[in-house]
Structure formats: C-alpha cells, structure tokens
Image 1 (tube, helix red, strand yellow):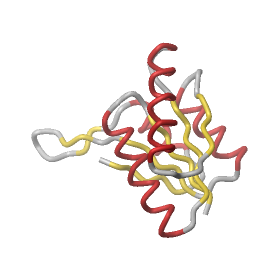
Image 2 (cartoon, helix red, strand yellow; image 1 turned 90 degrees about the horizontal axis):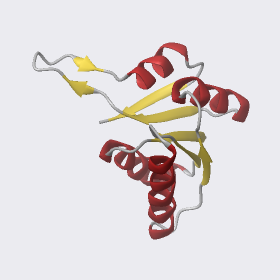
Image 3 (cartoon, one colour; image 1 turned 90 degrees about the vertical axis):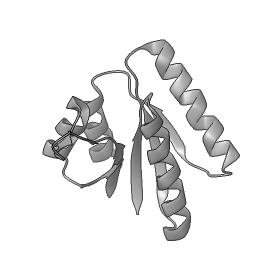
Length: 120
C-alpha cells in the first residue's frame, strides 16, 4: 500500500509519523511524508525533525514539502502519486465530546478520493 502521511508543526504531526512508521513496518507499506507549516522557518524545522525521526527509526521514506495551501496540495500530491491512504494528525474533542477538525483536515476529509486516517 502507498501511504502519504501529512506532518505539520505539532506534536500530533510527529505522532502521526511514528504510528505510520510502525504500521508500515508491519504491513510493508511504502511511505511518503508531506511536511507543511504556517511559515517557511517552521517548515524547515518540521522537515528537519521528520528527517531526523526517519533516520533514528532507520526507516526509508520520501519527503515532500507543501508550500502552498496544505489541504489542496496534499490532495493533489495524493492524486498525482496514486496513494492508497492519507494519514493526518488532528481531531480534538470538544467539552461535549464532539470531534473538532482544523481547516486542513476538514478540507482533506471532505474532498479526498482515497481513504483518510486521523491520528489523535
């Protein structure tokens, strides 16, 4: 299975990467990491953290930078690359127990042509 995991500048982003690596080892998935952040300096930091995590885990994965609108760029990358699954960090629970989605996550969930997995 070809998996695209989106990693942003949050702890949840790194958790999504860690869980994707773990699953990919068990299932033999091919993984590409798409890094995105609010600004260029944060993007550099996220990419460095991702590359460090991949090296520490001795896991081979491609890394792509998302510099435009994260939601639409993630979907374009997923469609163009023929990915079978998109893994994204996100989803918080409100005080009433409802899931709250950020704008990028909501856009991807509503528009993806492939399976989307949320890691909380």
